[in-house]
Image (cartoon, rainbow, N blue to C red; front, top):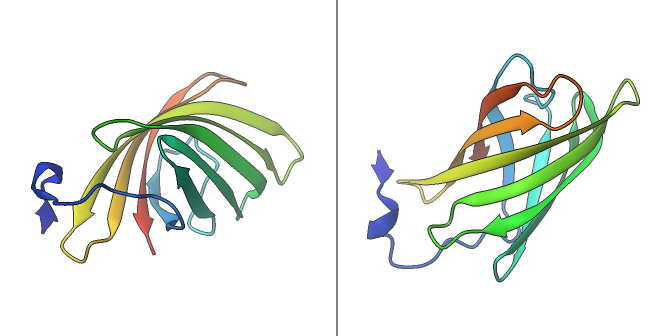
Length: 122
């Protein structure tokens, strides 16, 4: 079962949280072997990610007042291609207090296609 965010008594802090993808659109490059480590200082959010098809990636953005995230990302894939994009993430806090991030993203390089992904906290 999920908790509504407005019922949570404390703010979400993403600092030090680790996530893996549970689902990604076919046109995405992040897969089950990709690991994300998030950091937060105030409203500033950043993360590193790697694994699977991703050699190295990073993202930077903002934590909004409702704990949603807006960020841009870039990574180098196994084909040595640099890819860039932007993303909006909506958190859901599960009963076990772990966070799931429902994401709407778009490439800002290549074909500029859009996609959806779901990250789960580990």
